[in-house]
Length: 222
Image 1 (tube, rainbow, N blue to C red):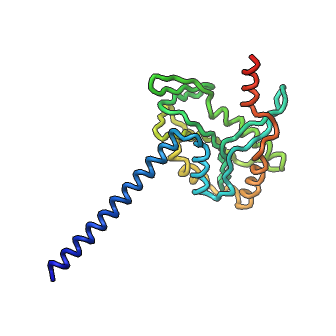
Image 2 (cartoon, rainbow, N blue to C red):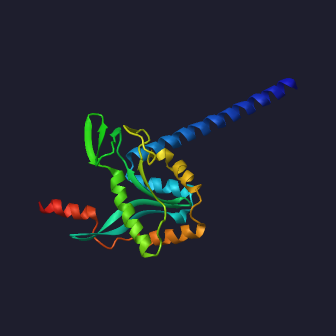
Image 3 (cartoon, one colour):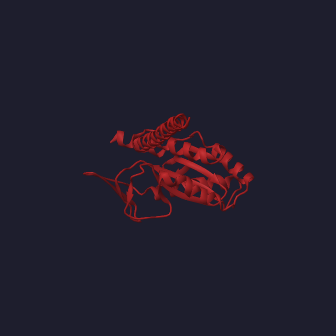
């Protein structure tokens, strides 16, 4: 009798251990696949968008918005990657997919070093400041002023390293935690959030040529 009970307990232990191993492997594979998507996927912005909609009210997270900017050459739309309307204010997120070491001094130009490759690109924080100005104008047209707006730059590659640290410069694995801290500030009411989100939603479709299209046309003519 004792041997039978011991055998049953042994079998149950093996089954339980098997389930633990399978679960652990699934977790590892899930993280691995997520990392591949973050590093190599074409839809990086949408991946960040999905992360935020799972963490916050889906109605307050929007992506691919277009806001008009008036210039001497005419009116053009500037494209905003992601907006998350939290209780602490509007988070305007610029998503970057650069890998490796990012040399990011407080200047107009940053530099990416990935292996032997070196690439210069415009400071995304400054780029996002232009987006924020356009968003603020859109809010003011609707009678909303003094709404807190935060500038965030998110790099999707979780192995990216930075030469300088800033509170607004984060990797994708820290974006939810960062915005949760912003949401805890409770500056805006739920009604404020709904109103602001609706204003943002009205900018889902572009009305003018974008700056990217303008630059592309200019290069084509040269």
